[in-house]
Amino acid sequence: MADDNSIFVGGKPFMNYVTGVVMQFTTKNAPEVIVKARGKFISRAVDVAEVASKRFLNGQVAINNIKIDSEEFQNKEGRDVRVSTIEIALGKL
Amino acid sequence: MADDNSIFVGGKPFMNYVTGVVMQFTTKNAPEVIVKARGKFISRAVDVAEVASKRFLNGQVAINNIKIDSEEFQNKEGRDVRVSTIEIALGKL
Image 1 (cartoon, each protein chain N blue to C red):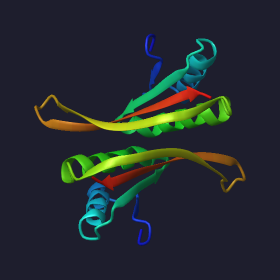
Image 2: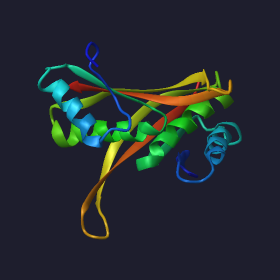
Image 3: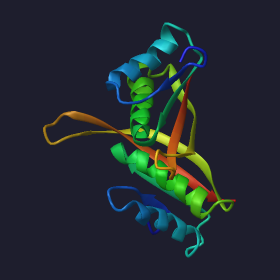
């Protein structure tokens, strides 16, 4: 999170992530923040990006770009598993 | 689904949606298909878009554009509720 201003969304309380995004823009004065997630947390990452940009930083921050992708790896049983990922880039207006 | 080639992802079996996307491109020869979802189904919509474009239509279809937004409405108790939405546009290469 330190060098590239990204927030990885997982199972912690929702507002932790929103506050994280807002702090990057305000306290740390970041020009861009990337909200990232994998699998079932993708819906949550979209919520974080929407709430941060529309409720807390409305008129100051917008969605610059959204990327989705897949990661493939082997699970403990040696089976190939695919998981989707998302990266939502928020930028100062 | 008929006029604008969109697939709305919800709680039906996962492969229903993947097949729906693939059929739009193959049987119906659509140039573009929009995968849409709201709330918790957003993660699933990303999975549908990834599996359809990378496993079933690899090299034939790519992600053209992704939009996220919020819908606000009042629930039965009269409270304001916000739900995130996603639209993933897949297009023929």
